[in-house]
Figure 1 (cartoon, helix red, strand yellow):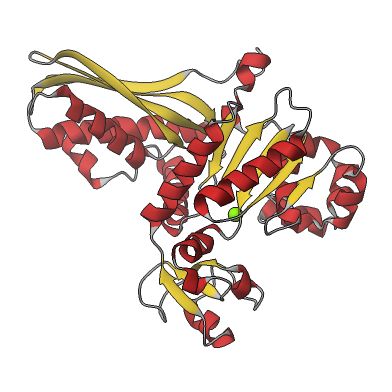
Figure 2 (spheres, helix red, strand yellow; figure 1 turned 45 degrees about the vertical axis):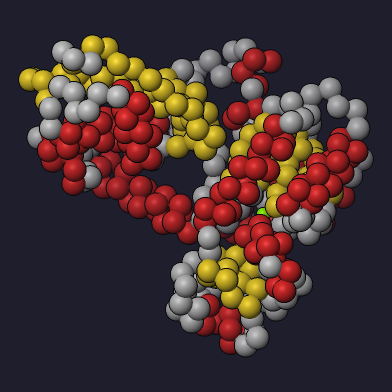
Length: 371
Ligand SMILES: [Mg+2]
């Protein structure tokens, strides 16, 4: 069984928890400080009830509700809270996955009373952060995620054999994760309306392989056999380099190459490993594991550069560089912050250009230093 935790109106709830004056009021979080010229990146439940939703322009939101409360997004605060919730959930000592900034999944191994556990988790989150979470429990991640959405806010929903058909019949297809884009449009054009219609046509859809970090690999050896353990690129420079900009340019290029391979295989990596070789530094290698996986070359590059700063040698001569990404998993992270969504769109656009015109046709400016 999978237990899916989905925070309720996460960013808005955090702001309301910090500032009780905002409690129960219609509130929007704007991605920028100018309240009439920004986009709603989160709305409180009172605002949602008025038809306000994320992605809407703030001007439109204010026209629906002139008394709307406004707070500028503070991403660092939301990420911090998210990480604290993750730490709290780690305490349950179950396979755990960070699915997005406000969603977490636990695999219930040997739990006979998942409802009781869910109640405990919800209470603990509320006691620590003064915000609510909705929990869904089901045998696959897709169903558990769906269940978490059905009784929001502060919901607790179990889908099992006894109510499977009933719940799927009552739930329109657009509620199901992944039905927003072309896939969903195709199903709906094909006449499918409810999740039950989809189940009758494609029963396997609900059994899709789960989110990654749930450590399935240990229990079902062979299942993930085709997934590589790591992806790496390295390069030996014609002459040892001392110019830090050139060295960083090479790290960036290698990071981008690794990231492209990751995205081609729909993988993301949690661990970045950097290897540097040179006359003074010898063979330096170090790695760091992050909670958030990535397949973004810029992010991998930044992680690698941070690792380089551990070498303690200032501007050593470098002759060889290697970037390795390991701790790989199916890329299931769903961007929620505006900046992440923008970045994802940008990466997709760059990939499609490079696919069409050849790898490296379009590249980060810094990498010209390697040419
Ligand atoms: Mg949520």
